[in-house]
Length: 305
Image (tube, rainbow, N blue to C red):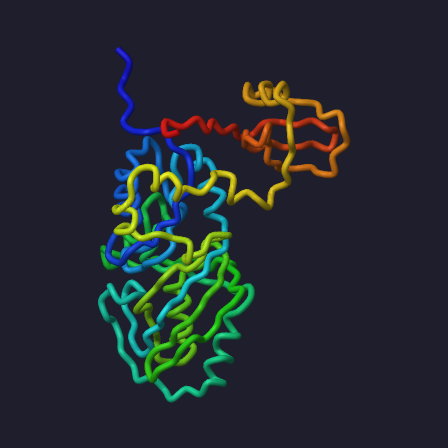
């Protein structure tokens, strides 16, 4: 007797506007149940205290989720000055409080400029990075601190949106591996008063923007047909990769994992998107000698018309 499927085979990317107070995994499971999807994953978690854009991948789209982890991200963050917590955000225990100095706009802008570009950042103890097989936050919860190596990241943009006596609202465009909590703490230290994240929202991830995202309550009002129309094609995040068109006979060989010798001269090499009759087949590698090697084949057959 064949094993019964646990859900539908659906493929695509959903842009979720994650609400405050839930983990990324819980948010994923809530949406997965709406679709009754067999397979799902997210593309880089948001802490429960953070809201905003969380791209969710279903079915074959999970094959591109790892590539999306490398995308640049944009955040809007409120940095509370004069307060330091053990976690670097408002959910942590306050470990120190200091008077916030009177700061001019010029001093603030100079500080932000010093954090723009390629910088070295020490990851926070409350992170999922591992040390000798254990996650740092597990060690931190035991009251222990270990030395962490600084990592090179890039802050492409760091703009001041608003300022009060004891807070800064910032727009941050950064590379993968950036910890906004560490950035907030480092800015606070630069002013001599410390700082912590009081609010955090992700507004962009790669090519995707929060304006195009949907909240859980909006999705719950939809029927299956409407939900399916919300899904973005699995190849959408791959648009910067060169495209190659194959014949039907070539597509059959590629689907079976066979290499092809492309006779016509193509001005591309390296990773390519493969298509046949406007159908996305997957990713391959184009060699300089004209050989096309399949690397990641996608089966986009769906249970939903």
